[in-house]
Amino acid sequence: MGRKAAREILMKVFYVYEVTGEFSFDIPDIIQDETKSNSYEDQKDYIENAMSIFIEKKDEIDKLISDNTIDWSIDRLSKVDLSIIRLAVCEMFYLNVPVKVAINEAVLLAKKYSSENAHTFINGVLGGCAKALIDENEVLGN
Image 1 (tube, helix red, strand yellow):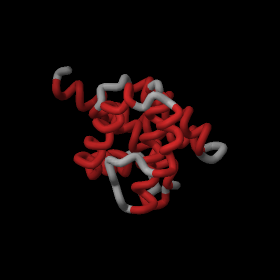
Image 2 (cartoon, helix red, strand yellow):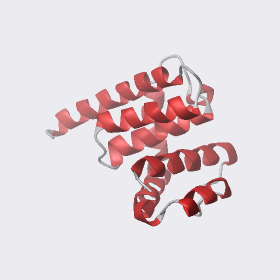
Image 3 (tube, rainbow, N blue to C red):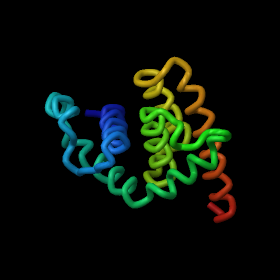
Image 4 (cartoon, rainbow, N blue to C red):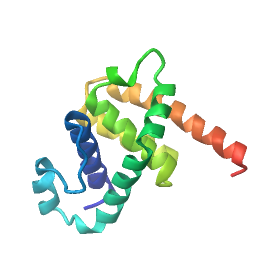
C-alpha cells in the first residue's frame, strides 16, 4: 500500500469519526477489505501517527479550517469535504508533508469522493490554510 491508499484510509476514518462521533485505532469495518487486500503494514505507522495527531490537535485543525471557510461554518461542510480538509491540514501542519503535495492529494480525493465542484472549494480553503502556515513559518524564522 502506498501513501495514496493510506490517505484514502485516513479520509474514511476521519469520515467515520465525523458521522459516529467515535474514534478508534481499530480500522473500521468499512475499510477492512481494503487493508487486507493491500499491504497495510508499510503505512501503518503513518496512519496511526496521523490519527494520534488528529485526536490531539482536532480543535486547532478545526479552528484553522473555520478561519479559512469564509461565510461557511464547519458544521455546513459536507462530512466528506471536512474529512479531506482535516487530513490535508494535518499533513501540512503536523506531518511535514509539503504543502503542494497535501493540497494536490486533497483535490484528488475530492474529485474521487465528493461532489463535482468540491475540489475547487477544498483547494481554496487549503490555500488559505497554506498561507497561514507560510506566515507562521516566517514569524518563526523557518
